[in-house]
Length: 118
Image (cartoon, rainbow, N blue to C red; front, side, top):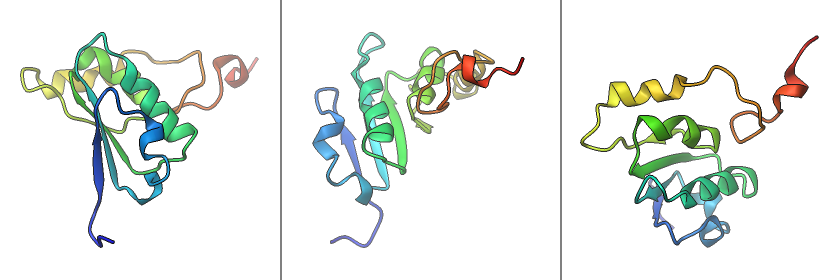
């Protein structure tokens, strides 16, 4: 019942299913990455995009830096809150780490073998 923009922040133990029924009403979902080794946010993002059809801004927050951006984008993140101790310009270079991907994901619906032209 709020006419302004709406958003939520999901902690690592709060999964996509938690907001599935209201996802279409949200403008922003921020997903926390508490540590590099905690990958639960990747699954949350992928499920929001692929299973629940979320089309709003999906923001990675927390332990977000150059080495994680490419993979976060692959699962559907389109916004990144870079750690304060990291240089944002250098971190954004991580989006260009690889020129091609083999597997389908949220950012590429077809695997490489289907995209190849012989």
